[in-house]
Length: 306
Image (cartoon, rainbow, N blue to C red; front, side, top):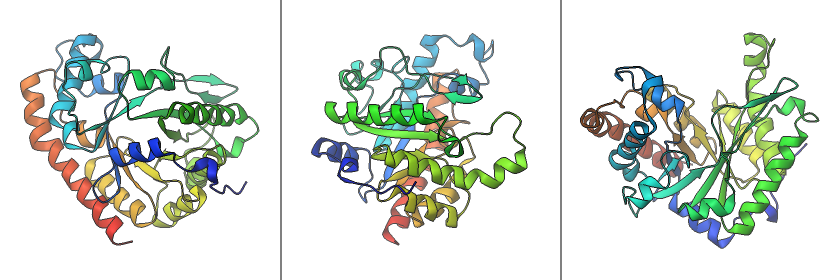
């Protein structure tokens, strides 16, 4: 399949406005990813009873601090509708100058014939994104481009959701995660990984996607191949939990080779959360925020150099 972006992939006026909201002054996407639930609990290692003992209210407080001390300094933040929303909007924690991306996907996944199937948060659709105050939506799909016939159900769902969000005037960021199959060796997966990411971009664009969130495909050459496959549709690099220094290098390489920016979560804040609000403020302000500013500078510089 050779994906070519068509008029169906072009942004509407409302979507262009949303795109500007989630981008830096230089036009690069930069979104703090804070929609994790269990993953966020897991890094709060000083909780007296461990991650399992962190209550919903305690997690909500941590997310509010993440918005207050980090997300409000970014063009936009990605949040979940189960814990963070509508709380941070209703309590006016979220700055009026920070865009809101609403995550539609639930934690975890189902398995069907060995392939992963994503799940929606109950009740989530494009209209609900609007009701929660979202400027944009994000939905995660698992996809193996080398299993295209078996993945047709995923492809059809991407197309359906793009159409729904367009009709509602909601910019949809389609996140694709490629993954290792049961029984597939580490060596075999590593060898085809760049092609899986490239293929995912191509398939998603053919299904109508207008903005993509993808894994770093591994090299400058692979990033350029993803850009070519995306056929003019902007794509942001996700951090996948790597350390900040590694992610900065990945983003620099990706943007220099056509990517449109980054969506950074754990690489920014995984060592900056605590069960203590005072400790969170200190760590987010003095550790995570400088990383965000460095990442923005890297994106702006790489875009300017293209």
